[in-house]
Amino acid sequence: AQSVTQLDSHVSVSEGTPVLLRCNYSSSYSPSLFWYVQHPNKGLQLLLKYTSAATLVKGINGFEAEFKKSETSFHLTKPSAHMSDAAEYFCVVSLFNDYKLSFGAGTTVTVRA
Amino acid sequence: DVKVTQSSRYLVKRTGEKVFLECVQDMDHENMFWYRQDPGLGLRLIYFSYDVKMKEKGDIPEGYSVSREKKERFSLILESASTNQTSMYLCASSVSSGGGLSTDTQYFGPGTRLTVL
Image 1: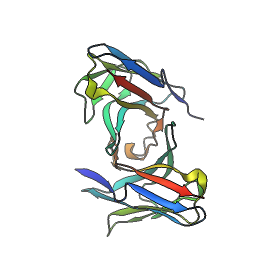
Image 2: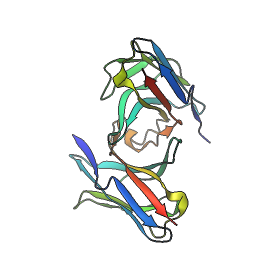
Image 3: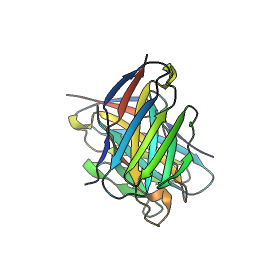
Image 4: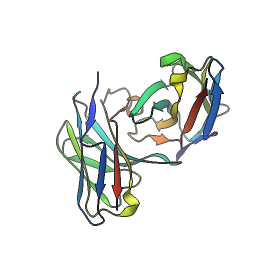
């Protein structure tokens, strides 16, 4: 079985300050991990993915995430938030050789001017 | 760019109606998926298809069926709509890269917000 827990349902940051979105997963096997972003009234867009290569993964728009097997975590960070980062973010896990993705409940990011 | 389109952005139907949600992708992807998205629950997989006329149940298939007669089109059918099917429905597609299915990026459509009265 696999599951994903996003530890914060809502994160509020000031523009120009760091963003941290926390994600823990449980899986009996080596997973693939993804972060997707959903802007208001838009479909989901892939930010980055981990597939057992480098543990620090860089994505689009300055985001990155680090896979920590010992902590079963895949936290998403960005050094400096921009107003356009206001959106909902989903942490997603998948097992090798499985079509299915398991989505976290989502974290809504608000950016204050 | 991959494009996944869904037939309607907003849909309002009455209880008991038969509802069709259509999804089309233009990148010749083998895999297509239907999810529903509800606040606090993330996305849950309803059905997916890995080839024409092939389908697999996801985590919440009850009350839904699907059809894939052509590679680019995947339809979700609510045989008799109920109020608990009011939700946002998202379609996605992915290519089978052969490198392990879990690594395949899924591309999402904009969603259809369905309200059942």
